[in-house]
Image (spheres, rainbow, N blue to C red):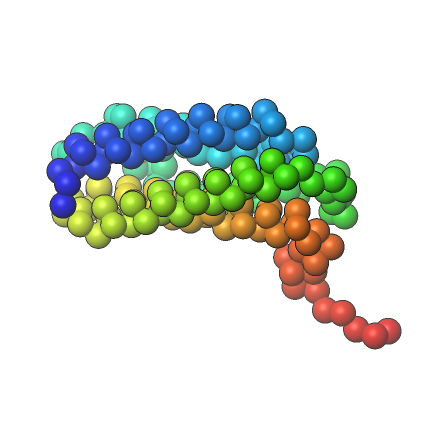
Length: 171
């Protein structure tokens, strides 16, 4: 295994790259919920970055331990979607750049998940293992949110049925 310092240096760079990417995506997307989603991801990545920068091999701060107990990205974003003025609001015009941004972001989050999962498996310190596991979970939550958003953009009418687990009947 890489030493813990190398793990954190790579993780810091990954989080910085994520912040930069999501800031560009937020600026370029036209849909308000897309902007809110990317803004939420920026906040998450900044939290990850702060924790990683403050981390030592010996222990996590009380604030960082508190982060491990906070709601994850999916729970926070679900609230953002609920604040939308209309449940039936749909994307009427999908920008190919939005689709590409989502696909790139999904790849980034997938790679982050794999990295943190692998690092957590190799960590021996329980606090470090818990942190890396939480970071992996957040990356996976981001991936699922992005995947659902992509589905919404590509098949928006079907997405609401799938999300609400609606049934269609003939009557």
